[in-house]
Each structure stands twice: as structure tokens, then as C-alpha cells.
Length: 314
Ligand code: TUI
Image (cartoon, rainbow, N blue to C red; front, top):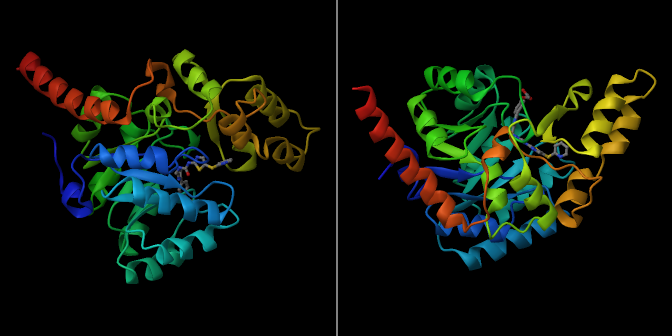
């Protein structure tokens, strides 16, 4: 069975992280992934710090396996969340959308394993120097907030530059993608979009149906003009957003106001005027299934494809 140094570091069975998807990744999904032997992550982007604290407590009841919290650094309550996870004894953190350098000392003193999500070699090196235990190298195939480089080029460049383990993310959806990530030098994979279709994912059914119906060309990146590009499904909302960005008479403030709350509306209400964040691999997600089946398919699928390809190419 596939194993790597990150399994020993975190006490997990399989080197599979579930992405800390904003508004989506709650105790239900995180515990299911952790119980399946992967690393479940709870998102800090929810209805306030106390709600996230409650999800952490719920997750402790649902699993005795390791799990973590993902901290979205651009969120207004990021500092509050950074302190809350220490209070609650969370042992593993991933961070996104910025540099967590200012919190590193506090987290390391609390014995927390810190795994920043990075989108460039420069930030990856900075994080390694700051004491990160590993990094997630996230390519722009991902859903949500994205960097510029894509997984195929980003992962090996970060692997070459760092000594600490590297988790590959972005566009990984099945055993083939997982195997490819390991070939690029990754020690683990992080998967978001496919877990949207987990039975234990509590996102609205409309969201799940949209993922199942997606094709290869179903996503679009908006928000570049605002300095925070976001990949989501093409919907009337995201198309209007893109049109506003291309219209010089619309101000950035107006665009921001248009986008505010859009992800919550999609996840919680299935509102068609919401933002359905998803990665490029949405077109490969074909069925709703338990998180355990997804984790096992990723790992067993990778083993199978690696063995078959090695034989076929010999
Ligand atoms: O953070 C993510 N993905 C996200 S956050 C999010 S919440 C949201 N809600 C509404 C609108 C927009 C976003 C949805 N998806 N992924 C991790 C990630 N981090 N991807 C890229 C980066 C990144 C990019 C630049 C990390 C650091 C960075 O460097 C900036 C710096 O400070 O050097």
C-alpha cells in the first residue's frame, strides 16, 4: 500500500489530504476522510470563529484519527481562528491565500504541524525557513483561490527546492492523477473537488448536481482584475462577474459587492446566483459515494496504474 514520510509525520494511514474547502469542509466531511485513513480538514471559512470551534469539537467526537483545520489567511477573522486552534488543541494546520509567517512561532510552540499552501517556489522556501513541516503545492487547476502556475510545473520545482515533504494539489481526481503527483516527487496528494461528491459532504444538493454534470470546460477563472483569481463553475453568476471585470465603467468596489457572500449562497442554499467553486477536474467526478470509497479509489487506483504502466512501458 502506498505510504510516505508524511504518513508517519501526521499519524495517517494514506497520504491523502481532503482540501479545506471554504463553507464546505466541516466536521462531517473531515471526520469521514480521517476515519477512512486520509487527513480530513475543516475550513475556517464559515459563519464565524465560534462555528468553526464547534466543528472542531464535533470532529473530535466523530473520529479518534488525526484531522486538521485550514486557515484562510485573507479572512477578516484569521487572527481569531489562529488563536482558537491553539485553544482547542488542533494538531495539524494548513493555511491558504497568503503567508502565515506571523503565526508560525505561536503554532510551533503549541506543537502544531504547520503545512502552508503555496503557489510558488519563493513562498515555499520562505515557509520552509520559517519552520513549516511540509507544504501543499497547489496548481491553478484547483477550485477557489488560485495562483498562476499549474500542478505539472509547480510541483517538481517545489520538490527540487525543498527538503520538507510536498503535498501536490490541483487537478488530482483519481488514481491516475495521484500516481502522476507521486511521479512528480510529491509525498502526498490533496483533493478537493472529488470530495464535493462525498456522501458526507454537506454542501447543497444543487452544488453536488452541478459537479456531477460538469464537463472539461465547465470552469472559469474570475477575479484577476481584483488581485484574487478564483476558479468556479461557469454559471450566470460567474459569467456576469467576468463581464463586469471587462467593463471599464464598473468599479472594483462594485464587482466586490456583487461577489460578496456568493460562495455561501451556493453551498448553503443552492442559489443559482451563487459562486460554485470547483477545480478543472469537476468533469471527472461521476458519482456520489462515501469518502472512504474516494480515498481508497485514489490510493488503490494509483497503485494499479503505476504497476500497469511500468509493465506496459517496459
Ligand atoms: O486558499 C485557497 N483556496 C481558496 S480560499 C477560498 S475562500 C474565498 N472566498 C471568496 C472569494 C475568494 C476566496 C476559496 N478557495 N487555496 C490555497 C492557495 N493559496 N492557493 C493559492 C494560494 C496562495 C497564493 C499566493 C498562497 C500564497 C500566496 O502568496 C501570497 C503572498 O503573500 O506571498
